[in-house]
Amino acid sequence: MFDSFRHSTSERLDRPNYHADFRRHYEGGIRSLRKLERGQNFKERGFPSWESFAIGDWESALSLIEEKRSVYGAQFQKAAGLGILERRLRVVEFPITPYVQWEMHVLRLRVELGDNIRAIDARKLADIEEEHLAPEVVILGDDVMYEVVYDDDGNAAGAHRIADKKAVEETSSGFDELYSRGEDFMTFFNREIAPLEAPAVIH
Image 1: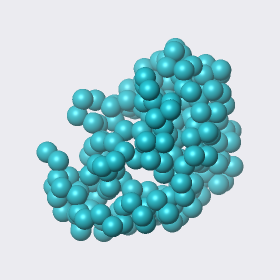
Image 2: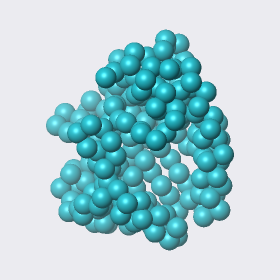
Image 3: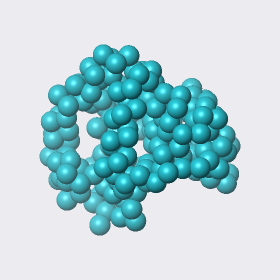
Image 4: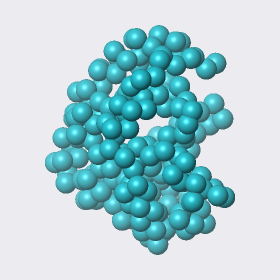
């Protein structure tokens, strides 16, 4: 699984060009968006909730997530208007990292607003990750996908754009298989995330 993804030719895009290319395809008549999240530690500077999380103010971090309600709601309305089915699979390693613990609370809001998110224990990917981890990838329709890339400090830094149709098709099939293995988000959240105490700040 994902072999063609790893061997496909890509074009490196910086962050502004990735966002521009993404928007062009997103609004160009696609019918699906698939997002596979594999990384366990990222930084989201500029997101007030994450900034509070990063300094150890867990209570504020959780309350500030609510500020995204209208933004996410508008995103989902736009997707519905364009006829795009969006699905996301969040891979979770154990023990759960502080970042993923925080992000799962953000994803809970997205699910509440109608996002199609599933979660999967990373141990259930052992059969496909003997040599390589599953990719951090966003797939738009049938024509293009992006391997999201980050700098050494965990900040988003653009993407590798892949337009090989065979690779897109095979990666989409791999996503669909893993998504089918995934668990209902709220079932996972209530069992694994909700009982956790506030995470320690990682400097």
